[in-house]
Image (cartoon, rainbow, N blue to C red):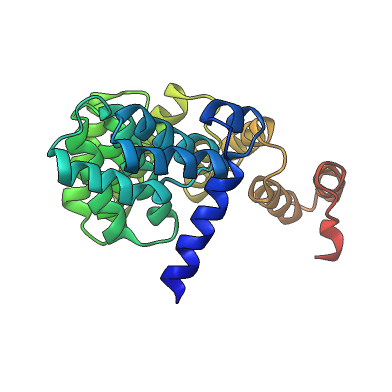
Length: 263
C-alpha cells in the first residue's frame, strides 16, 4: 500500500510538470518538482544529462544529497563507473557523508566520505571528513593521519588544523597544539570556530587578555553566536567589570532580540 502511494505521488508530481522542463521549474523555484522530473527522465531515457540535473538539484537546490544517492548508486551498478559525472558523484557522496556526520552517525559518514574520495582522488575535503569521522569514533591515530594528509593536500583546510590541535591537546602537547590553533586562523582569518578554539586554549593557559582578543575577533566575524558573548561576559564578571558585562548583554539583545539578563 505504501509503495502504491509513493508511485501515485510521483505520478502526480510528474503530471504537474507536464509541459515544463527542468530549467523552467528551477526558474520558478519548484526545486522538488525539478529534481523528480530530472530523475524520472533519467530512469526512462538513461540520458546522463538528466542524471546531472538530478544530482545538481539534490545538492544545490534541495540541499539533500541523500535524495540522489539511490539513483547514483543504481547508475554505478549498471555502468560500473562514474564517467562524465565524477565531480557531481563525489559531491553527492560527500554531502551525504556530511549530513550523517552532523547527526553523529560517524560510521555512515566514514563509508560515504570514502566513496567520495574514491571517485575523486584529490578530494581533500572528503579525506578530511574521513579523518574527522575516525577521530569522533575513537580512532585518534588513524584519524590524525588522514587529517594530516588532507591539510598537506590542501593547506587552506582550517578546520583540519583545529582538529589536529585538539588531538595534540589531548596528548598534552600544548606547544604543538598552540601552533596548529594559530595556523588555523592564519590560513582563514574569517574562521569563527578557529578564533574560538584559540581563545579557549589561551584562556586555559592563563592568557586571559590574549583570549579576549580572540573572542572579540570571533564576534566581528559572526555577532549572532552566543558562545563568544558568553566567554566575554564570564571574563568581565570574574573581574567585576559590570559595565562591560552589560555592554555585551545589550549588544547580544540588540542583534538577536534575546535578553540574556533573564536567561
